[in-house]
Image (cartoon, rainbow, N blue to C red; front, side, top):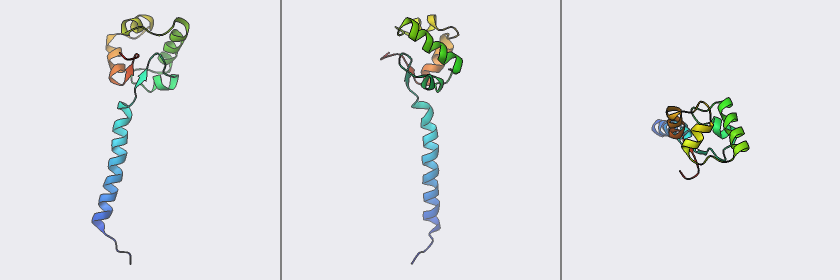
Length: 98
């Protein structure tokens, strides 16, 4: 026989909602991308990088090799200063193991 349990129904609903909310919360922080190997899509998913900047990064990396450090990256990519770099790093942009 089936009996409706309102407490159980509410708990199941809250559990589903928590999973969805937790998933959204994690989606921004698991966005790690290595600037030396990331795809256009991965770069664009990083806060502070739009389609044009992602393209400039890939073209520079392809034409002149991997970025050696963050100073090299900032010097070679127009429009990336200290402030913007900090935003991108906070969203998971990495450079090799550095």
